[in-house]
Image (cartoon, rainbow, N blue to C red):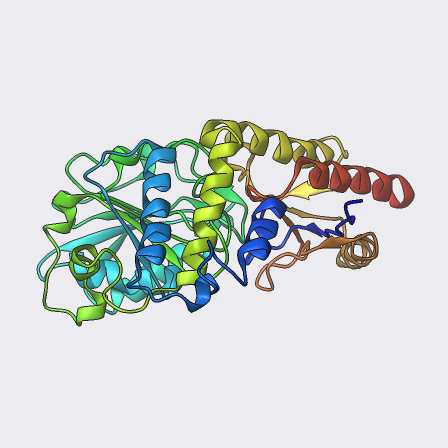
Length: 365
């Protein structure tokens, strides 16, 4: 008889839910990986057994996105926060400027870091509207000859997401996709670079994925510390120093899981369904719940909302916690409530949250 596994309704913003089957596979292989008598965590990163794990993860990500073979995939450390500095260090040459589209706290952090290293400008911003929406293409003011234009594809704190990415012409497009990578189809060819911390949709914390186009890589300066050079990591297949081997192994398992789900298109359909359940509860509440994001900018990953008073929000969060829901508090900088429905969050968890929201409104409306 199979033992029933208790799983919380995990709506944490990150680190976030992982597929149960992935965790069970890792558990099964934890002590003895493929007959080696060692855990993946104990393997040499120079061993053939680990290199197979490493290269399979790269191949799976390329396959899932249908990206051109020449694109490079890197596994780095330091999270998206290190990328905020690495991107301008490598690509913001003296005499050039780079544009940043301001859509939330993480784009602010990326802009501030780049501003320490070179000339940057804000190509658009919705800060004065409390970041309730994504700028329209007509609002973007991209300076000709910019080193790149940087966007944050999904905004975890404010619950907004780009539905379509801007056309930037000759200006390379760079995207921080930390919180919605692998959640919907994306034409990778539109981007010079994509980077993403793994801990939302790709795996556990500890590894950062970078996807870079070769012609963009050729623009990179070499006058930066070795460990901060993308070309060094490309030349060494992300094995210049010891990589976060276990996180990369887990990332590979998540990518295999995504393939078994039917790929990114199937995952996107399920994400639409999951988010729709919760947004419907908000929209049909008659104002009892109020979403933060404007409807055409809503995130499928992070559903942000408020109740009619802070007192009612505290009651909602306390009762939700007692009912087994985890991670529904809004970010400390904005308050309110937030349900992060990343890829591995099952439909059933979103159905349960929708039902809880309807029942709470019935009892407190």
